[in-house]
Image (cartoon, rainbow, N blue to C red; front, top):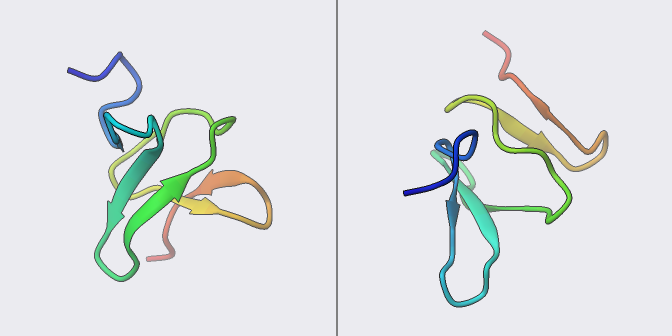
Length: 56
């Protein structure tokens, strides 16, 4: 079970790298220093280095 706040991502047990699944991109790597993914639909923006919500 993931610690509180990490329920919308997963960690590879061998490498310790964090990921989330995206319908378009597949498995997306989350940087070590990124905060926990806040929602199931949040997308990591590599330019602003923050979580964003998809446009409706």
